[in-house]
Length: 219
Image (cartoon, rainbow, N blue to C red; front, side, top):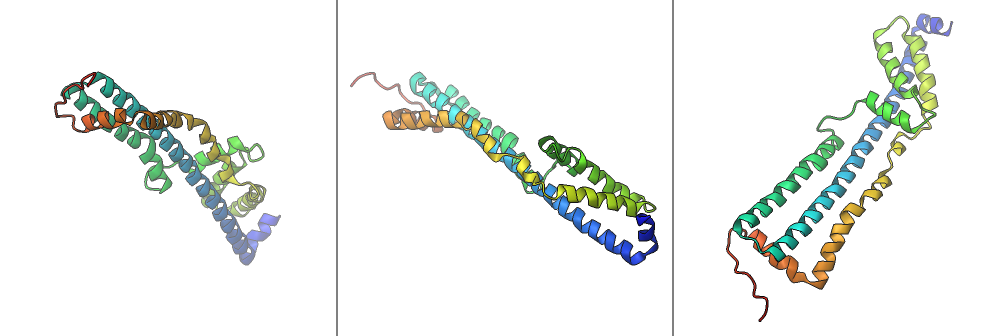
């Protein structure tokens, strides 16, 4: 009966439609905020693993060069391997989530975001996804639009208190820090205890095309 009155009274119908549109825009804004936080989380994790790869490769390569005193061919290989390894990690772990965070690349859809949010909030469950689907149905079904929009408003009121971005715990990345902290700590220890290991091997790797005579074991 309520839906029939809305259809018969154009002013009430327009007010109801406007309210639904405003509520839905607020809901979409909250989902967009979640999506940005989702990719921020991926970016932070990518930076951690980038640091882990960079520090680990640097430790292994510099120590190998210092004690192995390789020829120019090996040093050239290690030099370009280090560069391409880190470029590959940046292109794989950093650039995609960074572009998505700035909305420059492909991002998850609102429906996909709704499914992820529903996995974290039991009280949300599938209400969010159904609300998105109902909005699409309302745009194509003009005869029952008032009734559908009333259902949308009801579900949005239930979803309003839920903070969607809190489904992403940025602090969860702390458990991955050990992979970057350990090789970084090794570098710091070597830099304090025997800095020549880093400086000499790094110099030879940068000037990988030059010949360096082996250092005499004694003076």
